[in-house]
Length: 307
Image 1 (cartoon, rainbow, N blue to C red):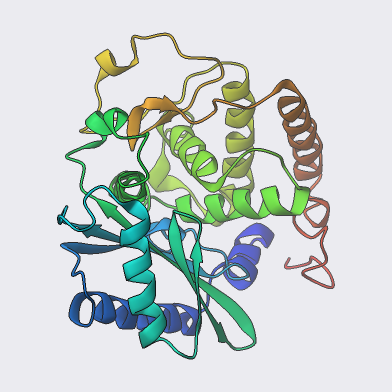
Image 2: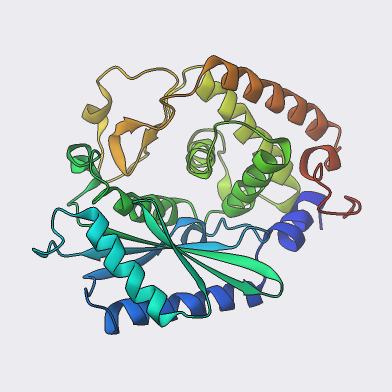
């Protein structure tokens, strides 16, 4: 097996035991929320990297999005909604650390095989579609639903394409190892999706040996994006070309969960310069197959050798 493919499979991909543990906790949390809670959610969804298949072995977590009806007692009171959900979870999970994180989520922490696992339970209200999300972005009562649309966009079009989840895991690990500023997981996932749309012709013919090349194409796409190349939701039922006729700040990467939002708003010149430097150094090491300088700077492995 080629080195990067081996690295993804044996170092970055969660084990079956990890996934089984996370799924069991999600089932328990879902049961509490739907059967033993003062407010019963209309829908409960998993989201985030677990749902998209891009979770890293050394960063196990799960997002659980709960969609509630706008009942009178909490209809306009985000704090009250979160507090009620928090109390129900705290009472039903006495052996887990349950904390309310500001006005956004309830964090539950558990330990399995001496590793900490994080579960974010995020209450929200329903929005009809991403196309109307722009009318609700000022309210924390609605924004959590975007993680559902992110998952549907990635899962529906890209998750099952050859090596897509592998290359996203490499990008996320690269960001952590190289301390790449500003870029988040959603940025990297959408740029990888754009690479598959535009830079790879024979997707079904990809092989293990092609993974370094796919990774390099994604790095190239990062630079193109910083140079002003637009990354837009591709064949996404909630968007069409008319959504993007307005002028956006450059660079821009449009959020499929809110087509009115440029996810690169706020990136500054200093961060762009640092990202360019990180990409340049990485591509040089990639060309010479010096993978340890890319993915093992923080010493996760004693050595990087899978050939």
